[in-house]
Length: 367
Image (cartoon, rainbow, N blue to C red):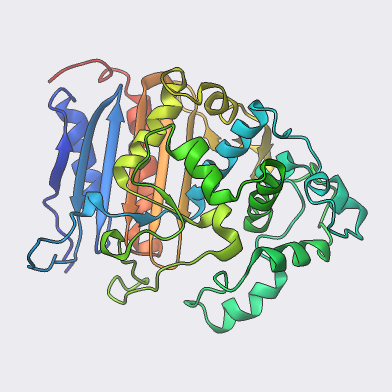
């Protein structure tokens, strides 16, 4: 029998949201299996946020940080922050999306001709022809699946590995998901701007959007969520992404993630209106038989009421989902401290967003 808390705690809710929406959130929360789960929805700016989980919070003085106030490892959702930063730098004229990566790293020897053809846009859209992770990470990952090899992988090593990696295909011709490729954006942006990636992200994206609970790199241990392995009981070590910080190294609170999604729904209300619009423009078709659309950073799926955009992320012990549907002004953020298919966080959160995107009757309705 599951020990999952079937009665969720509503930690932040606006009673103008239709009861049908809050009921759907509660129903979705009840099927996600993890020590800690937070599920949040925004509908035309009106929010509800609920928490649950199998973990029993300790009885301490002062009391532990509530689940919805913890900072979670957001994994590959980090990529959307990095590419938004890239779009902002492009709008500011610091660089161009179609600059060759080699132009930003002029001292790097690149013996393979296709490596010199890789642009920043190719890296952002996973069309550079690079593998998912560098080949020299694979042996360690196979031998020690719960030990992060990223922490010891510094920027110098990342660039050396790129220099000797032959692209699998001509850049821009095929889509192949690549943590390796997106990681290279951080040193490229740092070199173009003269500022390191954490500082760039903080000053140009996080502060302008009011994301005070989001950090590039590990959060302070007292407010960090603890991830768990597939069994939902064994703690997983915290992730240090090293030079891969730009592809999976950001930590964030559920509230900040929802604020971030809301910024994409109403770009004109933020200081980053143009970059926020730029990252939502479809760029290519990918997937089986090219049925899926991809923007500069978001997956872009059709619904009967217009496209929804989303991205998910995972580390060794945590999972995240963030998606939004501009036509109905709907956003869904979800985090969980468990890694594995049994958690069902990503498909459950996606199905919730899709169902809300298809239901236009609730938009604007009060209880």
